[in-house]
Each structure stands twice: as C-alpha cells, then as structure tokens.
Length: 203
Image (cartoon, rainbow, N blue to C red; front, top):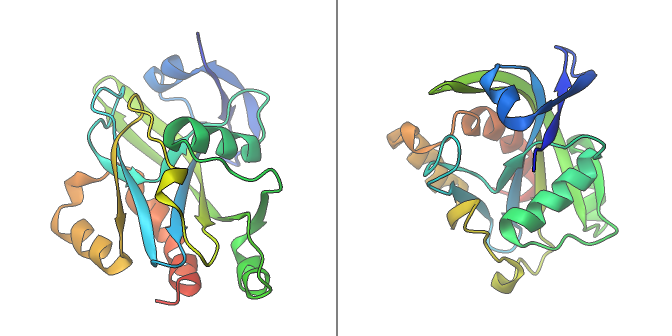
C-alpha cells in the first residue's frame, strides 16, 4: 500500500502530496519529524539503530523515532502513531505539543504528557539513487519523574534493530569518535534538541 507524504515549499508550506518512495527518488522537498525520548530519572536518551533492511541508512544510529506525517495527518497524530509503530510506546491521550520556550514553567509545575518542539531545519542527503530532502521538525518527549518502565517499549523489527539508553556526555564522545555511525539528520536534529535536553535533565 502506497504512503502519501506531504510536499512543502522552502517555507514549509504544504503544496501537495507524493508517494513516499517516489518522493525520495525525485529529491522532492517534504515534511518530516525527528523525536528524542529522554528519561528524566536516569538522565539518558533513547537511541535506535535502524533496521538493516530499511530503504536507506539501515544499521545506522539515530534518535528514538523519525518519520513523515502522512496526507491528512496532523503532526501530533503522526508523532503518536509512529511512536507506537516503531517503539510500541503508547502515548497518553491527553498529550500536548508545546514550544521549547514553554518547557521550564510547565515542568516546574509538575506537567507531564507533553512533547516539546525545539525547531526545524532543512537538509539534503543522497543515498544510492534516493535522497532525503526534508524540512525536519525536531521534538523532545520527557518521561515523568519516575522514568520509563522498560515494559513500555516493544520494538518493531521491521523498523528498529535495537535501542540503547545513553548519557549525553557519552553520546557526545561517540559522535566525535565515530561520526559515520549516525544518520545524516541525527547531528543537526540533536543540535536543536540539545539545549532543552541539558536544561531539563539538569546536566
């Protein structure tokens, strides 16, 4: 079954739709998202290793979940759906999306069930006849103060080969020592998420 994703102009304004694989063959600019998951108790991030047979970037490490909103799908619904599809993570129905600037006050008041948007970036990366030409919206999802229960996650082997929880300092060292271990979009996505992660995890 074909997947129709959202084509955009340089200002991220929706201009139409295209079949996912064809869009990647034709280098067409489209909307995407990358989400980081942080455990507030353990002060660690969840990274995923993409399944080896993904259509590109198989076996590379990246943020917890990355995908594209589909035709007729809101960004919130896309986030909820892909977290379930890739990681088996059930997100509460009262989930809200806030801007990163709202994070400090909301979390100090005990707020949970929020995903924060930290910004977006445009990039182009070729992959053997395909490409990613995206405006990628970057989000961070924090656990509550009790952290995540390991039973909350059930990996989809068609999407994810494995996952790891990692401290930011160790991730920084890993990126410096082995940059080719990561997807093309991971570093710029992390750059947008890093400030909020450091502030909220109190690192």
